[in-house]
Image (cartoon, rainbow, N blue to C red; front, side, top):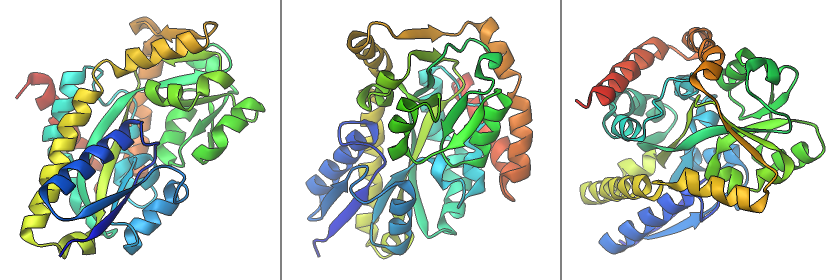
Length: 316
């Protein structure tokens, strides 16, 4: 039986999640009679809408950052403990490819929410874009900073000294333009494609995180597939993971070059180790907060992630 599967994601077609989805569609359609329909950001609503649609089975697949899934799966907030993920790309990819936390501990938590976790992948170093310069936590004092609706991300920016302001993505550009907020964070490709640099003057690389996203299927739908189709989907996900890792090579620098060309007056600052130290010093408090609000499996997830990160760092 040839079916049409619907897949929604949180970005535009030519952004990282869109590129992943297109590769997935290509793989599925090349290896089966099924068709995959893609729905980029905004076509079916905001992030919360597409998650509900995936849980109710209107969508078969959804790509959503743990930033938004944190309300459903508190443990997923672990990805917002600052400086937990490595800056080194090879270590980062090795972690996402082999992590026991992602492959074994997270799937049952997603399953409880009616979701089959297929993969998680990194989208790029997160950078702050602000209307005033940031070289220390003091510079974020009284800065209203847009964050995803995620309690731990709120804690993280509070500990950085900012005033975290949760807002749906569709409202961010206008809020920066009118001064309701003075900052937001995202990977460089997203800052470039959404033109966030037009309404901010400074981009700060504090090295505090890498944007993580998760691809899921509606569990009832996935469980109902034949063993062959399940394997075909997993193979397509794996091929898309490899593809998106390659696609991102050099993407950050390329995006920053495009931003500089579009707005020569922009100031892009990569913080020194010394400047990062006070930001890094907040990580411990945010980690403690995660253990408090991160759900019953918080400690187990954090411990396993640290073991996985250590394995990635040692190349084992």
